[in-house]
Image (cartoon, rainbow, N blue to C red; front, side, top):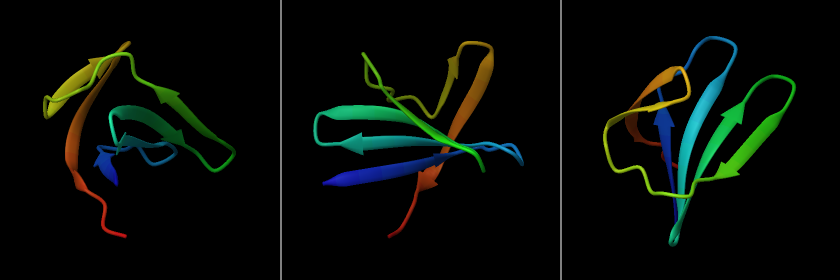
Length: 63
């Protein structure tokens, strides 16, 4: 089962937190490319930071 959580986004970049079975991926989507990175540790908090950016989980994206 795959769960996709949408994070707060800017106008030119969209971030997603994807849960797929035991793994979790941080996904960046722009109009030019898609970049996905497997996270070494699961993110369980509603608010978190990666580098100098702060994020908040906005909820699950429906298919």
